[in-house]
Length: 478
Image (cartoon, rainbow, N blue to C red; front, side, top):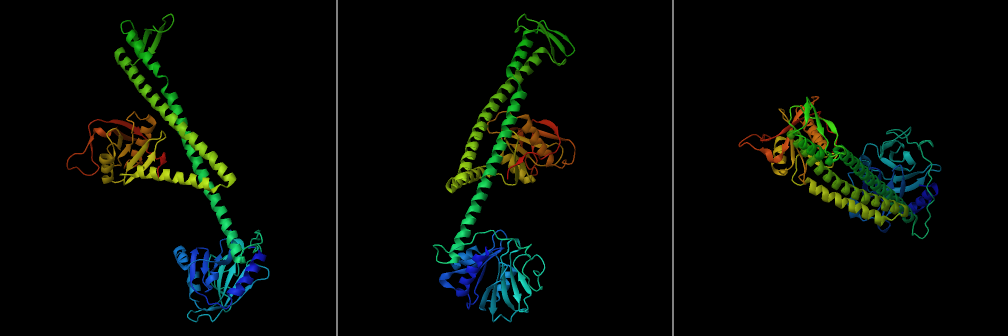
Protein backbone atom coordinates (compact mmCIF):
# COMPACT_ATOMS: atom_id res chain seq x y z
CA UNK A 1 0.00 0.00 0.00
CA UNK A 2 1.09 3.56 -0.63
CA UNK A 3 2.39 5.55 2.34
CA UNK A 4 -0.33 8.20 2.00
CA UNK A 5 -3.08 5.57 1.88
CA UNK A 6 -1.71 3.96 5.03
CA UNK A 7 -1.69 7.30 6.85
CA UNK A 8 -5.38 7.80 6.06
CA UNK A 9 -6.22 4.25 7.18
CA UNK A 10 -4.29 4.71 10.44
CA UNK A 11 -6.28 7.85 11.16
CA UNK A 12 -9.51 5.91 10.58
CA UNK A 13 -8.37 3.03 12.80
CA UNK A 14 -7.31 5.38 15.61
CA UNK A 15 -10.86 6.68 15.78
CA UNK A 16 -12.50 3.25 15.64
CA UNK A 17 -10.10 0.63 17.06
CA UNK A 18 -8.21 2.50 19.78
CA UNK A 19 -9.64 1.52 23.16
CA UNK A 20 -11.40 -1.56 21.77
CA UNK A 21 -10.76 -5.08 23.13
CA UNK A 22 -9.28 -7.75 20.86
CA UNK A 23 -11.80 -10.45 20.00
CA UNK A 24 -11.70 -13.52 17.74
CA UNK A 25 -8.96 -14.06 15.19
CA UNK A 26 -9.80 -15.75 11.86
CA UNK A 27 -6.97 -17.16 9.71
CA UNK A 28 -8.24 -16.73 6.14
CA UNK A 29 -5.07 -17.86 4.32
CA UNK A 30 -1.42 -18.57 5.20
CA UNK A 31 -0.72 -14.84 4.80
CA UNK A 32 -3.96 -13.13 5.89
CA UNK A 33 -6.07 -12.64 9.02
CA UNK A 34 -9.34 -11.02 10.02
CA UNK A 35 -9.40 -9.66 13.58
CA UNK A 36 -12.59 -8.79 15.43
CA UNK A 37 -12.33 -5.67 17.61
CA UNK A 38 -16.07 -5.65 18.42
CA UNK A 39 -16.74 -2.76 16.02
CA UNK A 40 -20.19 -4.09 15.04
CA UNK A 41 -21.29 -2.12 11.96
CA UNK A 42 -17.70 -1.23 10.95
CA UNK A 43 -16.70 -4.88 10.59
CA UNK A 44 -13.32 -6.55 11.22
CA UNK A 45 -9.71 -5.58 10.57
CA UNK A 46 -8.35 -7.43 7.52
CA UNK A 47 -4.56 -7.77 7.21
CA UNK A 48 -2.72 -9.46 4.34
CA UNK A 49 1.05 -9.78 4.14
CA UNK A 50 1.03 -11.45 0.73
CA UNK A 51 4.22 -10.02 -0.87
CA UNK A 52 2.47 -9.15 -4.14
CA UNK A 53 -0.13 -6.94 -2.40
CA UNK A 54 0.34 -6.38 1.37
CA UNK A 55 -2.61 -4.39 2.75
CA UNK A 56 -4.70 -3.53 5.78
CA UNK A 57 -8.23 -2.10 6.14
CA UNK A 58 -11.63 -2.77 7.68
CA UNK A 59 -14.01 -5.23 6.01
CA UNK A 60 -17.64 -5.97 6.73
CA UNK A 61 -18.06 -9.74 7.04
CA UNK A 62 -20.49 -11.86 9.00
CA UNK A 63 -19.05 -14.19 11.63
CA UNK A 64 -20.50 -17.24 9.88
CA UNK A 65 -18.88 -16.23 6.60
CA UNK A 66 -15.51 -15.81 8.32
CA UNK A 67 -15.89 -19.16 10.09
CA UNK A 68 -16.69 -20.82 6.77
CA UNK A 69 -13.65 -19.32 5.02
CA UNK A 70 -11.22 -19.75 7.91
CA UNK A 71 -8.42 -22.32 7.78
CA UNK A 72 -6.57 -23.94 10.69
CA UNK A 73 -4.96 -21.21 12.79
CA UNK A 74 -1.20 -20.75 12.52
CA UNK A 75 1.02 -20.47 15.63
CA UNK A 76 0.87 -16.70 15.08
CA UNK A 77 -2.94 -16.66 15.13
CA UNK A 78 -3.00 -18.92 18.19
CA UNK A 79 -0.58 -16.64 20.04
CA UNK A 80 -2.61 -13.57 19.09
CA UNK A 81 -5.80 -15.27 20.25
CA UNK A 82 -4.33 -15.71 23.77
CA UNK A 83 -4.57 -11.90 24.06
CA UNK A 84 -8.36 -11.93 23.75
CA UNK A 85 -9.98 -9.04 25.64
CA UNK A 86 -6.74 -7.03 25.94
CA UNK A 87 -7.30 -3.45 24.76
CA UNK A 88 -5.68 -1.59 21.87
CA UNK A 89 -4.13 1.41 23.57
CA UNK A 90 -2.75 3.07 20.43
CA UNK A 91 -2.05 2.60 16.71
CA UNK A 92 1.05 4.22 15.23
CA UNK A 93 2.80 4.26 11.88
CA UNK A 94 6.58 4.48 11.45
CA UNK A 95 7.64 7.75 9.89
CA UNK A 96 9.52 6.30 6.93
CA UNK A 97 8.54 2.65 6.51
CA UNK A 98 5.13 1.13 5.76
CA UNK A 99 5.05 -0.35 9.25
CA UNK A 100 2.02 -0.11 11.57
CA UNK A 101 2.14 -0.92 15.27
CA UNK A 102 -0.82 -1.96 17.40
CA UNK A 103 -0.01 -1.37 21.08
CA UNK A 104 -1.95 -3.43 23.64
CA UNK A 105 -2.68 -2.61 27.27
CA UNK A 106 -3.32 -5.19 29.97
CA UNK A 107 -1.37 -7.97 28.20
CA UNK A 108 -2.15 -11.42 29.53
CA UNK A 109 0.16 -12.90 32.14
CA UNK A 110 -0.75 -16.50 31.24
CA UNK A 111 2.20 -16.75 28.88
CA UNK A 112 5.91 -16.66 29.62
CA UNK A 113 6.58 -13.55 27.49
CA UNK A 114 3.51 -11.27 27.54
CA UNK A 115 2.80 -9.69 24.18
CA UNK A 116 2.52 -5.91 24.07
CA UNK A 117 2.67 -5.06 20.35
CA UNK A 118 1.53 -6.39 16.97
CA UNK A 119 3.56 -5.08 14.02
CA UNK A 120 2.02 -5.05 10.54
CA UNK A 121 5.01 -4.80 8.19
CA UNK A 122 3.52 -4.03 4.73
CA UNK A 123 6.81 -3.85 2.83
CA UNK A 124 6.51 -5.95 -0.31
CA UNK A 125 8.56 -9.14 -0.36
CA UNK A 126 9.53 -8.66 3.30
CA UNK A 127 5.89 -8.15 4.38
CA UNK A 128 5.09 -9.90 7.65
CA UNK A 129 3.19 -9.78 10.93
CA UNK A 130 5.07 -9.88 14.23
CA UNK A 131 4.10 -10.14 17.89
CA UNK A 132 6.52 -8.40 20.28
CA UNK A 133 7.01 -8.64 24.03
CA UNK A 134 7.63 -5.75 26.44
CA UNK A 135 11.28 -5.53 25.36
CA UNK A 136 10.17 -5.30 21.72
CA UNK A 137 11.64 -8.71 21.01
CA UNK A 138 9.92 -10.97 18.48
CA UNK A 139 7.73 -13.66 20.01
CA UNK A 140 6.00 -14.89 16.85
CA UNK A 141 5.93 -14.17 13.08
CA UNK A 142 3.22 -15.06 10.57
CA UNK A 143 5.61 -15.67 7.64
CA UNK A 144 9.17 -16.97 7.71
CA UNK A 145 11.18 -13.87 8.66
CA UNK A 146 14.05 -12.54 6.54
CA UNK A 147 17.01 -10.44 7.62
CA UNK A 148 18.42 -8.95 10.79
CA UNK A 149 16.01 -7.75 13.45
CA UNK A 150 13.31 -10.02 12.03
CA UNK A 151 14.16 -13.33 13.71
CA UNK A 152 12.51 -14.83 16.84
CA UNK A 153 13.91 -13.44 20.12
CA UNK A 154 15.70 -10.61 18.29
CA UNK A 155 14.78 -7.03 19.03
CA UNK A 156 12.49 -5.98 16.20
CA UNK A 157 13.90 -3.73 13.48
CA UNK A 158 12.07 -2.63 10.32
CA UNK A 159 13.55 -4.14 7.13
CA UNK A 160 16.29 -2.34 5.26
CA UNK A 161 15.22 -0.35 2.23
CA UNK A 162 16.83 -3.00 0.00
CA UNK A 163 14.58 -5.70 1.46
CA UNK A 164 11.48 -3.49 1.44
CA UNK A 165 10.20 -3.08 -2.12
CA UNK A 166 9.19 0.46 -3.04
CA UNK A 167 5.43 0.64 -3.41
CA UNK A 168 4.22 1.62 -6.88
CA UNK A 169 0.56 1.43 -5.98
CA UNK A 170 -1.63 4.49 -6.45
CA UNK A 171 -2.86 6.60 -3.59
CA UNK A 172 -6.39 5.44 -2.73
CA UNK A 173 -8.86 8.24 -2.04
CA UNK A 174 -12.23 7.99 -0.34
CA UNK A 175 -14.06 9.39 -3.35
CA UNK A 176 -17.72 8.41 -3.21
CA UNK A 177 -17.18 5.74 -0.55
CA UNK A 178 -18.15 6.17 3.11
CA UNK A 179 -14.66 5.38 4.39
CA UNK A 180 -11.10 4.83 3.25
CA UNK A 181 -11.45 1.15 4.19
CA UNK A 182 -14.40 0.75 1.80
CA UNK A 183 -12.40 2.44 -0.96
CA UNK A 184 -9.36 0.23 -0.29
CA UNK A 185 -11.47 -2.93 -0.16
CA UNK A 186 -13.03 -2.12 -3.55
CA UNK A 187 -9.61 -1.25 -5.04
CA UNK A 188 -8.13 -4.61 -4.05
CA UNK A 189 -11.29 -6.46 -5.04
CA UNK A 190 -10.86 -5.09 -8.56
CA UNK A 191 -7.17 -6.03 -8.56
CA UNK A 192 -8.03 -9.58 -7.48
CA UNK A 193 -10.73 -9.82 -10.15
CA UNK A 194 -8.22 -8.67 -12.75
CA UNK A 195 -5.69 -11.25 -11.58
CA UNK A 196 -8.31 -14.00 -11.59
CA UNK A 197 -9.34 -13.00 -15.12
CA UNK A 198 -5.71 -13.12 -16.32
CA UNK A 199 -5.10 -16.49 -14.68
CA UNK A 200 -8.31 -17.98 -16.06
CA UNK A 201 -7.53 -16.63 -19.54
CA UNK A 202 -3.96 -17.98 -19.43
CA UNK A 203 -5.18 -21.40 -18.27
CA UNK A 204 -7.79 -21.59 -21.03
CA UNK A 205 -5.34 -20.41 -23.70
CA UNK A 206 -2.80 -23.01 -22.66
CA UNK A 207 -5.45 -25.74 -22.60
CA UNK A 208 -6.71 -24.89 -26.09
CA UNK A 209 -3.14 -24.60 -27.41
CA UNK A 210 -2.28 -28.05 -26.06
CA UNK A 211 -5.44 -29.53 -27.61
CA UNK A 212 -4.59 -27.99 -30.99
CA UNK A 213 -1.02 -29.32 -30.76
CA UNK A 214 -2.29 -32.80 -29.93
CA UNK A 215 -4.80 -32.82 -32.81
CA UNK A 216 -2.18 -31.49 -35.22
CA UNK A 217 0.21 -34.29 -34.20
CA UNK A 218 -2.55 -36.87 -34.69
CA UNK A 219 -3.32 -35.42 -38.12
CA UNK A 220 0.35 -35.66 -39.12
CA UNK A 221 0.45 -39.29 -37.96
CA UNK A 222 -2.67 -40.14 -39.94
CA UNK A 223 -1.34 -38.42 -43.04
CA UNK A 224 1.89 -40.41 -42.74
CA UNK A 225 -0.16 -43.60 -42.40
CA UNK A 226 -1.87 -42.81 -45.70
CA UNK A 227 1.54 -42.52 -47.32
CA UNK A 228 2.76 -45.76 -45.70
CA UNK A 229 -0.26 -47.74 -46.91
CA UNK A 230 0.37 -46.55 -50.45
CA UNK A 231 -2.08 -47.06 -53.27
CA UNK A 232 -4.37 -50.01 -52.57
CA UNK A 233 -4.96 -50.49 -56.32
CA UNK A 234 -1.24 -51.30 -56.73
CA UNK A 235 -1.72 -54.47 -54.64
CA UNK A 236 -4.80 -55.45 -56.65
CA UNK A 237 -2.96 -54.91 -59.94
CA UNK A 238 -0.13 -57.15 -58.73
CA UNK A 239 -2.58 -59.90 -57.77
CA UNK A 240 -4.33 -59.71 -61.15
CA UNK A 241 -0.98 -59.77 -62.94
CA UNK A 242 0.20 -62.89 -61.08
CA UNK A 243 -3.01 -64.76 -61.81
CA UNK A 244 -2.84 -63.80 -65.48
CA UNK A 245 0.72 -65.23 -65.75
CA UNK A 246 0.28 -68.53 -63.94
CA UNK A 247 0.71 -70.49 -67.18
CA UNK A 248 3.66 -68.61 -68.71
CA UNK A 249 5.68 -67.07 -65.86
CA UNK A 250 9.38 -67.92 -65.72
CA UNK A 251 10.78 -68.39 -62.19
CA UNK A 252 14.35 -68.48 -60.94
CA UNK A 253 14.71 -68.47 -57.15
CA UNK A 254 12.80 -65.49 -55.79
CA UNK A 255 12.58 -63.86 -59.23
CA UNK A 256 9.55 -64.24 -61.51
CA UNK A 257 9.40 -62.85 -65.06
CA UNK A 258 5.84 -62.10 -66.18
CA UNK A 259 4.12 -60.29 -69.02
CA UNK A 260 2.51 -56.98 -68.04
CA UNK A 261 -0.78 -57.27 -69.91
CA UNK A 262 -2.01 -53.98 -68.43
CA UNK A 263 0.70 -51.73 -69.94
CA UNK A 264 1.12 -50.54 -73.51
CA UNK A 265 3.24 -52.98 -75.53
CA UNK A 266 2.79 -55.69 -72.89
CA UNK A 267 6.45 -55.73 -71.79
CA UNK A 268 8.04 -58.47 -69.69
CA UNK A 269 8.77 -57.35 -66.11
CA UNK A 270 10.57 -59.00 -63.21
CA UNK A 271 8.94 -59.40 -59.81
CA UNK A 272 10.30 -60.52 -56.45
CA UNK A 273 8.26 -63.49 -55.16
CA UNK A 274 8.95 -65.76 -52.17
CA UNK A 275 10.44 -68.87 -53.82
CA UNK A 276 8.53 -71.08 -51.38
CA UNK A 277 5.18 -69.66 -52.51
CA UNK A 278 3.20 -70.46 -55.61
CA UNK A 279 1.98 -67.66 -57.86
CA UNK A 280 -1.55 -68.37 -56.60
CA UNK A 281 -0.46 -67.89 -52.96
CA UNK A 282 1.49 -64.74 -53.85
CA UNK A 283 -1.58 -63.39 -55.65
CA UNK A 284 -3.73 -64.21 -52.58
CA UNK A 285 -1.26 -62.26 -50.40
CA UNK A 286 -1.47 -59.30 -52.79
CA UNK A 287 -5.29 -59.32 -52.69
CA UNK A 288 -5.15 -59.56 -48.87
CA UNK A 289 -2.88 -56.50 -48.76
CA UNK A 290 -5.28 -54.76 -51.14
CA UNK A 291 -8.23 -55.42 -48.82
CA UNK A 292 -6.33 -54.29 -45.71
CA UNK A 293 -5.00 -51.17 -47.40
CA UNK A 294 -8.43 -50.27 -48.75
CA UNK A 295 -10.06 -50.65 -45.31
CA UNK A 296 -7.24 -48.82 -43.56
CA UNK A 297 -7.24 -45.92 -46.02
CA UNK A 298 -11.01 -45.56 -45.66
CA UNK A 299 -10.76 -45.53 -41.88
CA UNK A 300 -7.82 -43.10 -41.89
CA UNK A 301 -9.67 -40.71 -44.19
CA UNK A 302 -12.72 -40.79 -41.90
CA UNK A 303 -10.54 -40.07 -38.87
CA UNK A 304 -8.74 -37.31 -40.75
CA UNK A 305 -12.08 -35.64 -41.48
CA UNK A 306 -13.00 -35.83 -37.79
CA UNK A 307 -9.61 -34.44 -36.70
CA UNK A 308 -9.88 -31.59 -39.23
CA UNK A 309 -13.34 -30.75 -37.85
CA UNK A 310 -12.02 -30.78 -34.27
CA UNK A 311 -9.09 -28.57 -35.28
CA UNK A 312 -11.46 -26.08 -36.91
CA UNK A 313 -13.62 -25.98 -33.76
CA UNK A 314 -10.57 -25.52 -31.53
CA UNK A 315 -9.19 -22.69 -33.68
CA UNK A 316 -12.60 -21.02 -33.60
CA UNK A 317 -12.55 -21.32 -29.80
CA UNK A 318 -9.03 -19.90 -29.79
CA UNK A 319 -10.19 -16.89 -31.82
CA UNK A 320 -13.17 -16.28 -29.51
CA UNK A 321 -10.89 -16.61 -26.50
CA UNK A 322 -8.47 -14.01 -27.87
CA UNK A 323 -11.39 -11.67 -28.57
CA UNK A 324 -12.77 -12.18 -25.04
CA UNK A 325 -9.38 -11.42 -23.51
CA UNK A 326 -8.90 -8.32 -25.66
CA UNK A 327 -12.34 -6.96 -24.75
CA UNK A 328 -12.21 -8.28 -21.16
CA UNK A 329 -15.51 -10.07 -21.73
CA UNK A 330 -15.77 -12.25 -18.64
CA UNK A 331 -19.07 -13.79 -19.77
CA UNK A 332 -17.51 -15.35 -22.89
CA UNK A 333 -14.52 -16.50 -20.88
CA UNK A 334 -16.82 -18.08 -18.29
CA UNK A 335 -18.90 -19.80 -20.99
CA UNK A 336 -15.83 -21.21 -22.71
CA UNK A 337 -14.47 -22.49 -19.41
CA UNK A 338 -17.85 -23.95 -18.39
CA UNK A 339 -18.23 -25.67 -21.75
CA UNK A 340 -14.79 -27.23 -21.41
CA UNK A 341 -15.49 -28.35 -17.86
CA UNK A 342 -18.81 -29.96 -18.81
CA UNK A 343 -17.24 -31.74 -21.78
CA UNK A 344 -14.32 -32.91 -19.67
CA UNK A 345 -16.67 -34.05 -16.88
CA UNK A 346 -18.83 -36.05 -19.31
CA UNK A 347 -15.78 -37.57 -20.96
CA UNK A 348 -14.22 -38.42 -17.61
CA UNK A 349 -17.42 -40.03 -16.34
CA UNK A 350 -17.79 -42.01 -19.55
CA UNK A 351 -14.15 -43.09 -19.74
CA UNK A 352 -13.84 -44.04 -16.08
CA UNK A 353 -17.05 -46.09 -15.91
CA UNK A 354 -16.51 -49.70 -14.80
CA UNK A 355 -12.69 -49.61 -15.01
CA UNK A 356 -11.36 -49.47 -11.45
CA UNK A 357 -7.79 -50.52 -10.78
CA UNK A 358 -6.39 -49.49 -14.15
CA UNK A 359 -3.98 -47.13 -15.87
CA UNK A 360 -5.31 -45.47 -19.01
CA UNK A 361 -3.44 -44.16 -22.03
CA UNK A 362 -4.12 -42.78 -25.50
CA UNK A 363 -2.10 -44.16 -28.42
CA UNK A 364 -0.53 -41.99 -31.12
CA UNK A 365 -3.48 -42.93 -33.34
CA UNK A 366 -6.04 -41.86 -30.72
CA UNK A 367 -7.06 -45.31 -29.41
CA UNK A 368 -7.60 -45.81 -25.67
CA UNK A 369 -5.23 -48.34 -24.09
CA UNK A 370 -6.09 -49.69 -20.61
CA UNK A 371 -3.64 -51.49 -18.33
CA UNK A 372 -4.70 -53.60 -15.34
CA UNK A 373 -2.91 -53.28 -12.00
CA UNK A 374 -3.48 -56.40 -9.85
CA UNK A 375 -4.49 -59.93 -10.80
CA UNK A 376 -8.11 -59.27 -9.82
CA UNK A 377 -8.04 -55.98 -11.74
CA UNK A 378 -6.78 -57.94 -14.76
CA UNK A 379 -9.74 -60.32 -14.52
CA UNK A 380 -12.18 -57.42 -14.28
CA UNK A 381 -10.56 -55.62 -17.22
CA UNK A 382 -10.45 -58.68 -19.47
CA UNK A 383 -13.73 -60.41 -18.70
CA UNK A 384 -16.01 -57.52 -17.70
CA UNK A 385 -14.74 -54.38 -19.42
CA UNK A 386 -13.28 -55.68 -22.67
CA UNK A 387 -15.62 -56.42 -25.57
CA UNK A 388 -15.06 -59.34 -27.98
CA UNK A 389 -13.40 -57.15 -30.64
CA UNK A 390 -10.99 -55.37 -28.25
CA UNK A 391 -7.33 -56.24 -28.65
CA UNK A 392 -5.81 -58.02 -25.63
CA UNK A 393 -2.07 -58.21 -24.85
CA UNK A 394 0.11 -59.85 -22.19
CA UNK A 395 3.81 -60.62 -21.70
CA UNK A 396 4.65 -64.18 -22.77
CA UNK A 397 5.89 -66.49 -19.98
CA UNK A 398 6.03 -63.68 -17.40
CA UNK A 399 3.48 -62.44 -14.85
CA UNK A 400 2.23 -58.99 -15.71
CA UNK A 401 -0.67 -56.67 -16.45
CA UNK A 402 -3.44 -57.42 -18.90
CA UNK A 403 -3.65 -54.71 -21.55
CA UNK A 404 -6.62 -53.98 -23.79
CA UNK A 405 -7.11 -51.56 -26.67
CA UNK A 406 -10.63 -50.22 -27.14
CA UNK A 407 -11.77 -50.70 -30.74
CA UNK A 408 -15.36 -49.54 -31.09
CA UNK A 409 -15.50 -49.68 -34.91
CA UNK A 410 -14.12 -53.25 -35.12
CA UNK A 411 -11.67 -52.33 -37.85
CA UNK A 412 -8.06 -53.42 -37.95
CA UNK A 413 -5.91 -51.45 -35.53
CA UNK A 414 -2.93 -49.46 -36.84
CA UNK A 415 0.34 -51.34 -36.33
CA UNK A 416 1.75 -48.39 -34.40
CA UNK A 417 -1.03 -48.68 -31.79
CA UNK A 418 -0.41 -52.44 -31.46
CA UNK A 419 3.31 -51.80 -30.85
CA UNK A 420 2.62 -49.05 -28.28
CA UNK A 421 0.16 -51.28 -26.38
CA UNK A 422 2.66 -54.16 -26.51
CA UNK A 423 5.35 -51.90 -25.06
CA UNK A 424 3.03 -51.12 -22.13
CA UNK A 425 2.37 -54.84 -21.59
CA UNK A 426 6.15 -55.36 -21.46
CA UNK A 427 6.66 -52.35 -19.18
CA UNK A 428 4.11 -53.57 -16.62
CA UNK A 429 5.42 -57.13 -16.41
CA UNK A 430 8.18 -58.90 -14.52
CA UNK A 431 10.26 -58.71 -17.70
CA UNK A 432 10.25 -54.88 -17.65
CA UNK A 433 14.06 -54.75 -17.26
CA UNK A 434 14.73 -56.88 -20.35
CA UNK A 435 15.81 -55.25 -23.61
CA UNK A 436 13.20 -57.21 -25.60
CA UNK A 437 10.04 -58.92 -24.39
CA UNK A 438 7.79 -61.37 -26.23
CA UNK A 439 4.17 -60.20 -26.11
CA UNK A 440 1.17 -62.38 -26.93
CA UNK A 441 -1.80 -60.57 -28.46
CA UNK A 442 -5.22 -61.60 -29.66
CA UNK A 443 -8.84 -60.47 -29.71
CA UNK A 444 -10.73 -60.73 -26.44
CA UNK A 445 -13.14 -63.24 -28.02
CA UNK A 446 -10.33 -65.81 -28.19
CA UNK A 447 -9.84 -65.80 -24.41
CA UNK A 448 -11.49 -67.95 -21.76
CA UNK A 449 -11.17 -68.38 -18.02
CA UNK A 450 -10.30 -71.91 -16.86
CA UNK A 451 -12.76 -73.06 -14.22
CA UNK A 452 -11.38 -72.59 -10.71
CA UNK A 453 -8.20 -70.89 -11.95
CA UNK A 454 -6.38 -68.16 -10.02
CA UNK A 455 -7.16 -64.46 -10.71
CA UNK A 456 -5.44 -63.17 -13.85
CA UNK A 457 -5.06 -66.58 -15.51
CA UNK A 458 -6.54 -66.95 -19.02
CA UNK A 459 -6.54 -69.51 -21.84
CA UNK A 460 -5.89 -68.35 -25.43
CA UNK A 461 -7.35 -70.36 -28.30
CA UNK A 462 -5.51 -68.25 -30.88
CA UNK A 463 -2.83 -65.59 -30.64
CA UNK A 464 0.10 -63.86 -32.33
CA UNK A 465 3.42 -62.70 -30.88
CA UNK A 466 5.54 -59.58 -31.19
CA UNK A 467 8.91 -58.65 -29.64
CA UNK A 468 9.13 -55.11 -28.26
CA UNK A 469 11.20 -52.99 -25.93
CA UNK A 470 9.40 -52.14 -22.63
CA UNK A 471 8.25 -48.52 -22.72
CA UNK A 472 5.64 -46.09 -21.42
CA UNK A 473 5.90 -43.34 -24.03
CA UNK A 474 2.33 -42.46 -24.97
CA UNK A 475 -0.08 -39.97 -23.43
CA UNK A 476 -1.41 -40.91 -19.97
CA UNK A 477 -5.10 -40.16 -19.43
CA UNK A 478 -5.51 -38.70 -15.92
